[in-house]
Image 1 (cartoon, each protein chain N blue to C red):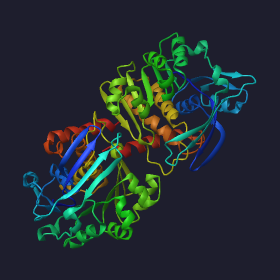
Image 2 (image 1 turned 180 degrees about the vertical axis):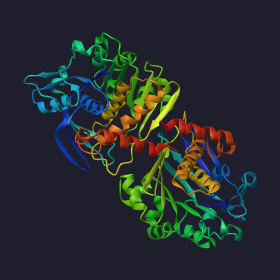
Image 3 (image 1 turned 45 degrees about the horizontal axis):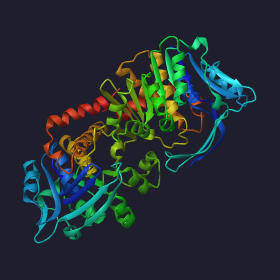
Image 4 (image 1 turned 60 degrees about the vertical axis):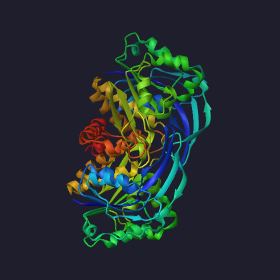
Length: 302
Length: 302
């Protein structure tokens, strides 16, 4: 069943304690779509790029069943660019450069064919844009999921609150959940946030895993203990893509199936961090995914 | 099957963002024994106290099947005293007072009856003392488990290395595992530490759960998401007590059973943090334990 992702498609320059990658392909919608592409088809992207963006990267997505015709290419424009440097613990990071470029004028107009997508994943963007996308859908999606960040809580709180009222699943990290709710306890934070609109809340805890709250229940998936984490960039978006990819392919919104979605998200994120940028994600096989899914079961079942 | 715990029995003054507890009963052996007492009998403690220690606290332990005749009471002496204050995140803490008092001269001599205990849990103490206890055992225990801390790595590295060679299960936290191994990755840290003697390594990650490494396998148990954490003091020792209590009652060292031990440890720790000091641990029932064990299954199974 069709999954529409809206978000950035970008260049990243990434420095971690293990190395550096210059001007590699990044962006929330890119990671979401690559991850989801292993689980469901078709998927679609709505985004904006400059004509500096390599065509073969779009073709690689097309080859995975991702429709990129909703990506607006601005002639003479430059793609969104982010550069950052991770701290030694691979958790904290400093942003060195944020060049919005064509993203500054991003005002997505959904192609007619996308307006009836059944699953909608809104990557981190201004809440105004996220809400405008939801409002353009002519058929109410079965699931609208949304990611956001502290930045929008600081400068666009009212718009964000208006937007998340329209959302089924909110996907944020632990610090964002604390900021949004004013509670340190993630259980209290979740109880509060679930009164703001979303039916389910996913709290990402980076290497420490992810929590799913909803229907009065809680599910937890750990991060897979890895020999090495090379680059955490995009792990959260990859998680969201794997999660929504599983939800879209099954069309099953039961809590039991959402648990499996959280695990598929964690599986895809565990691949993502094993190399810089999209390197590892691009070479994943179905066998890799199922074998790592089994590894998660072995890790936590008792 | 008999479980012998060796460690501190103490007074603690604890300040957390939620409140303060003055001169409450604490100490590693106390928490270990309370937790283990719900899972196995008999257990024994070897420790040292001053005559300021309330007799009714020993009687409360006796009532739970804990033999306290191995606790040396020094006439006119004062019990070990620790005071600390937790940071807002309830993870970091500052030690405000450490009065060793009678602990400064602790040189445990095992009662004859304890020398054939099948399970030995060595709480955090100088590695010299921990080794001397192991060497006093006349029958090799089925399992020797040991906790330690960064302090001993800094000032008694050689003695610690000599001691952990004699140990079956090492139980330390994530930062200690990183320091001991020189690796940031916990998988690399575990691979290294398992070459130093222990057959199994448990890495405690506080609110983020615990990992068990050994037999080329990994198991992970999360921390239970709680509405509120009131006081984390003793949670690590309580975890160790629940874990070893389960191992001792089952006598089963298979990896499958050790997984269940890790969960029982996590269950007991989840009670421990719900109130200051031993308050909650003292009122736990068998039903509470089994119902929380089921809660862990519901939390992670998929």
